Length: 122
Image 1 (cartoon, rainbow, N blue to C red):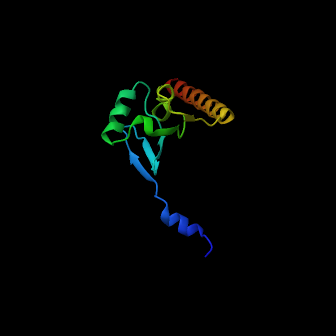
Image 2 (cartoon, helix red, strand yellow):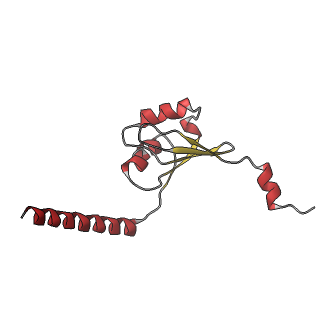
Image 3 (cartoon, helix red, strand yellow):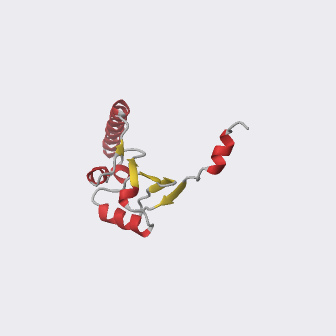
């Protein structure tokens, strides 16, 4: 009997997603079998909080095979350096052009808001 894709899917362990966030920060550990990935990396300076959250969920930091930031805001990538120093490899996508466009857009918005504020007080 030929091997089918659906048979493989039924025998594989489905991935699980566990929220290990704290306060207003959400990050998740995605597990498939013994492989674990952390999606988003919390605020800078909160490594102890992250470790405590992982410990409470029974997930040792050493079990994390990869850290991924959904985007590079402080609450999503703040612990990247700490995780790297703890031996967790990071997946980093380079989006220099997109960041440059975002920065220009943000500067343009700030300039327009400033101009509108100035016009409103005149």
